[in-house]
Amino acid sequence: MDYEDLGFAKIDHHRHLRKGFPEVIYCEGKTPAQIAQIAKRISQNGHDVLATRADRKAFRAIKKILKSAKYFELARIVTAQRKPSRSDRDSVAGSIALITAGTADLPVAEEAAGTAEFLGNKVERIYDVGVAGIHRLLKNMPKIQKAKVIIVVAGMEGALPSVIGGLIDKPIIAVPTSIGYGASFKGLSALLTMMNSCAPGVAVVNIDNGFGAAVMAHYILKCA
Image (cartoon, rainbow, N blue to C red; front, side, top):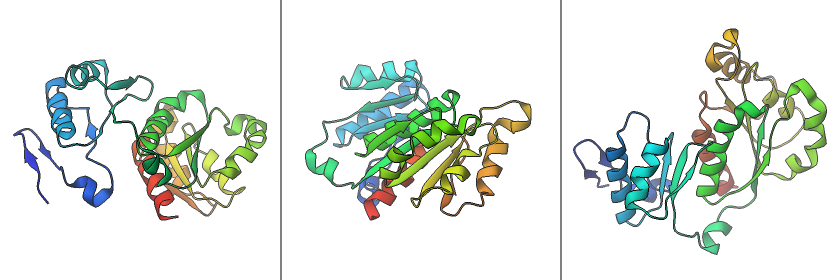
């Protein structure tokens, strides 16, 4: 259970043995130099690199040392990944339906999508189908029904996971976002709505935590 001490960070190189994937870099609060050094050591130990909440400064710092690095601006993630083998892709059965209530929820949704795909999952994106126009959701129900796990990302009042939860028999991971006017309290209103859902089978992660939702969906599929 060893780790590497860089002084400013202790890199858990054995995390992939316990969790199935390497340590992920959360970039907020770290300098570009610190991010680059962590990414370098993760890569040198034979692991793929995923950095979340990354800006362009962080990306450029990683790109200088890892030429394969790619930046996904909307999702604010950086990946430096060897091409996944077919066996890696086949190790996770089924797909994830990633649903948003509105277009404003896309940054959080794309963080979830990018993370899930980094972990080897197939993602079906179904965006802007919130309760303000329920016919948009109903038209997409055949695609939603085919998925094994559902991630629902919503701000404002956060009602969409409950609606979907009453229509399908699949596990739903609800992600409240900080989108909304003053009384939404930067996502707290959506969080409480989702936690108080009367629809069974809905679990909730923290506000704007697309990464956490993707990891949970990944583990559900692995255990299926």
